[in-house]
Amino acid sequence: MGNFDATNFAITALVIIFSITLHEFGHAIAADKLGDDTPRRQGRISLSPTAHLDPVGLVMILMTCYFGVGLGWGKPVQVDFRNFRNERRDDVIVTIAGPTMNLLLALVFGLFLRFMISSGYASGIHPLLFQVCWLFVTCNLSLMFFNLLPIFPLDGSHIMRRFLPPQQGEQFYAWMQQFGPMILLGLVFFGGGILSSILSPAIANTTKIILGA
Image (tube, rainbow, N blue to C red; front, side, top):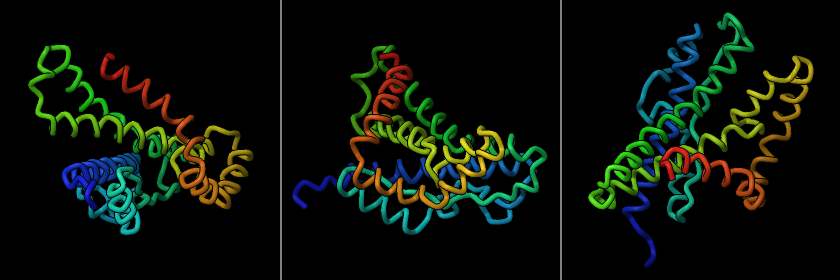
């Protein structure tokens, strides 16, 4: 308890909650624009965190933020493929919309930092503002790349399903639905080194590109 930083805990939790909210909103608004009103009927066309947060995922966020990690999930957006004009194409668009929202958030806050640094105003940025911007960049890039892993129930598994030939795609997705959650839990809790070796270079290099470093 002596090392607990309440400010850092609150900032990290709020950044993750906001980022997950925007991620799920991206899925919902994309599905709505492509003709599926399921998210709208379920109240998901909203920027309110209460519309998108999963109770267990929220508790996980708060618990892991306490230990300085920050890990959780939102409520999956439900879609009805029958409402899409082109099921394969529109499913990919809806799926990519979530990670795209995370990339946009990282760009907005990262380019703000880049402008301040390149303009010579970096020393004038309040440390708290710098921390918020930095967390928005790193958290959202982490969310984006993590969700693009082709493991169910992450977005990458949906994308892989649609990019493979139809028969192989359905076989892959059926297998992932059965074993994906166990694989994912194993990687998160016991394969941190494997995940880090996959995600860290992508996150670090993209951060450098955005900040111009």
